[in-house]
Each structure stands twice: as C-alpha cells, then as structure tokens.
Length: 477
Ligand code: NAP
Image 1: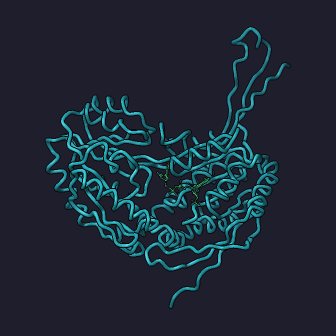
Image 2: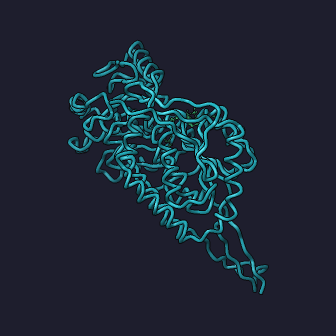
C-alpha cells in the first residue's frame, strides 16, 4: 500500500505553521509526490527573522553547558532516527541508501563536535604592557556571538551541510533562520522536530521554505541578519554578496576538483577510491573528482582498471541497499550533463563508458582524449562525469590542477614526499589530500575554498570562529 502524502509544516518561533501556498516534495527516482511543504510568504519569513532576533539576547546568555546539552541531544536524537532520516534523504535528494546513511552518521558527529565546541570557544589575554601606553592595564578579548544567522543551503547534503551551519551557530550563541534548497526541504523540517525535542528554546532555530529568489533574497537583505552562511553555486554566492550589504558572509561554493596519480601510486587502493570519488551522489558533491591526471607510464593500466571498476556500479533506485548511483536532482541537470558529454565528443573526446541518461538517471561516464578548454574539464560538472588526462611530468600535472578558476580541494597519489610538498606549495586550494582524492573530508577539519570556491572556512571549530566577533576588554585598575 502506498504511504499517504505527508503534509509538513514550517517551524517558526517554536510553532509549526502553514502558509497560503505549498509545494510538492518529489521522490527523485519515482517522480511521485510524497510530501507537501508550505512556501513561506514574505510575512512568514519576516516572522521567522523576528523570532530569531527576539530570541537572541536570552540564547546568547544561555550558559555553555546548556548549549552543549541541547546539541548533544540533537546528536542522540539523530542517531535514534537514522534510518527514517536516511530514507527522507534518499527520496528527496535521490542519494543512494548507503551514502544517505553515511550522511546521517556524519551529521551525528557534526552536532557532537558542535556540542564540544560550545564549551571550548574562548578568547585570550593581551600583554598590554608590550606598549608603553598599555602599562598598568589589563587586557583580554572574548569571542561573542553575532546575532541572527541566515543559513542558505544546497540540495546535495541536506542534513550535514545544514549541520555545519546550525551546530556552530547554536554552539556559540547565535540564533538561526534556515532556508533549505527547494528540492530538499523535508530533511530540514525533520531536523526542526529534533531541535524542538532536544530542548532548543522557541525562536532559536527556525525553518522557512521557498525559492532562492524570494525567501533566499529576504534572508539576504534583512538588516536584522548579522551573518549569512551560504553553501551553493558561485553565481548565487556572488548575487548574495552583492545584495547583503554590511554583513559577515561565509561562502562555500563549487569546484572542478582534480587529482593526480603518480606512477608509484598503489593502484589497487587508488582505482576504487577514484571511482567512488567520481560517482558518489551522482557526482553532485562539491569536491567530487572531475579531472583525473594520470602519469603516462600507468595511464593505460589505470584507465582499464578504472573502467572495469565503473562497470561494477549499480545504477538506479537509491532506496535499494546496494545502489551506488541514484538519480540526479532534476532532469534538467541530467540533460545538461549529457549535452556536455556530447559537446566534448564533438570536440574530439572519447566516451569509454556511460554518456547516456534515462530521465534523471545519468550513467557514470568516463571520458578520455579531453582538452583543458572543454566544459567537462574547465567548468564544474556536478554530475557523474570524470575525465582522464595523460600527463608527462609531475610539474605539468600540478600546473593543470592549479589552472582552474576554482580552489576547493585537490588530491595527489604519491609516496614521494618532495613531490607531495611541491604540489602543496603550488596548488591554490583550501585542502590538499596526499594519497587520497579531492573528496576526502572529515567534519572537524577546516574546509572551504579559495578563488571562485568561496570565502571563509567551515569545519566545526572554524565555523564557530566565523560566526563570532571579537570583543576587546581593557581594565585600568
Ligand atoms: P544553488 O542553486 O546555488 O542553491 C543553493 C541555495 O541557494 C538554495 O537554497 C537556493 O534556493 C538558494 N538560492 C538560489 N538563488 C538565490 C538567491 N538569489 N538568493 C539567495 N538564495 C538563493 O546550489 P545547488 O544547486 O543547490 O547546489 C550545487 C552547488 O553547491 C554546486 O556549485 C556545489 O559545488 C555547491 N556546493 C558547495 C559546497 C561546499 O562546501 N563548498 C558543498 C555543497 C555544494 P532554491 O533551492 O530555491 O533555488
């Protein structure tokens, strides 16, 4: 029997609210509507901002041990509902079951790290007498919360990328209004149930759903917002920065990640890891492996094994426990990915496997004979596409990885420390992964990009720093 369509509500000021309009939440594999969510009007969005603004004074003075307790509760409650939430992610984001379960596991940890950080955030003393004018004075600085944070988030990690904003914001004493991606609102609404049960006071955490052009913009321009924490595409990030005015911003944006495979790489480890890095979540990961630079001495062998490994992937229904690659978020994205492959082929590339789509499901695709100026190489694909490029010298490979308008993460397989350090020094990215691909991330490490990949850093401690300001105190006894 088909489950009834769920009618979800928004969560504002500790209450569950509807609005005049609503929109469907689509199962990305079957195409059926499995829930409806209200679309926040301007008045409803205004109510959420007001609630967060009014809740801030009390929340910012709530002792750290109480903030710790609430965030620990969130972590525990997520653990209790792991399978239910993974199913929601699977259906609304089209993410394969094992990766949906993995996302919930990571979020459990992200909230745990946030709880711990609530007890750790602190300032320092300043040796005032280092200046003659400071003699006889005592100085110290504090980290203080900013106020209301607006969190605008993408579809591809609807729980954990939200966790990277909600956890740190609440840990340091900010309140928050969250606008999830319109394609994946249900995970965020389920998180609100968890925050309510975890004991977050009314107004501290609010969720509004609606398009980027309306709700997203209202959450960008409102003067009561002190900080915008955005994860999404570079063009939207730029629009937000233009409209934000004098607000702190963190921008976690896109990438066309590269990884280098040197001849001394252990191929039995590198090949399966590179395949997973290219196709997990249908390549819709900001650090998904898109450009593979393989030394000519091993290119033939690597490519053969890479294609064999890709053939083993199970593509289709993300709810099946052994699925590797589910649908893309919208059919138009699969159409675009297929068109990019066709364009590359017209320009001389060769498809070794994949290249086709059925509805939203794009086959994992491996290209060779590519050139740096092809879209599949120089723009962010955000699709299950990877290009293999044969190189002659390590210096060339490093130069090509660096030759990108983006700068999020890169990977290098080598056991030669000198080469590894050469690459670390030359590639302008937020993170270099040695003996792994660009996709490696754990949730407490600093994470974020340079160039078009963004501004600021997340990773719990670093997000806490970005979500606070410094207050200097001087005492003249
Ligand atoms: P997106 O289209 O930029 O959307 C992200 C969020 O911004 C959504 O909530 C969207 O709302 C909202 N938005 C759209 N237009 C807006 C506007 N004018 N003002 C305010 N908000 C607006 O990105 P996406 O397609 O969801 O995600 C893919 C992108 O995110 C890729 O580029 C990927 O690399 C990047 N990403 C980066 C990271 C990272 O950590 N660096 C992580 C994950 C993803 P609607 O849904 O209503 O359009």
